[in-house]
Length: 169
Image 1 (spheres, rainbow, N blue to C red):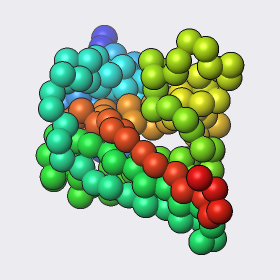
Image 2: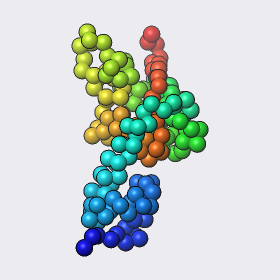
Image 3: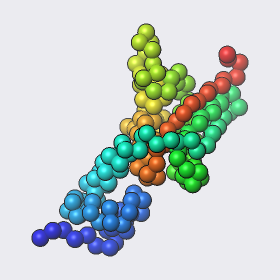
């Protein structure tokens, strides 16, 4: 007999993932009640849907700043498809985290595709999207972006960034 999740299980998974009720129900059924497996199923499904959205225009978003002790600052432009998502707390937190990462780690390039062939350092040391997130080293900046993509169901991307340090060119 097939597993039938309880309404409380569905609600708990929905609260944690922000996925639709029926998506949560199907994921729990497929995972036979294992919430961790169900989260993985939802994440994988969301990522497959995001593959289809990567060509969508993402011209909305926000510019976020981060200044550390008045000596180091960063500006980042993070884009999404709609201004509704740009006002979303998860999107705003992503922009803040990316700005903090730029200030702390001083990346030279946005992605590994931008790193020139003659660059000595590995991409994960110089490309922002490849770097480990300073607050959660098990995740890359691209992983943070993907998490927000899955949650918002929109194409989210970092378009550009700049870093400033007092007394340096």
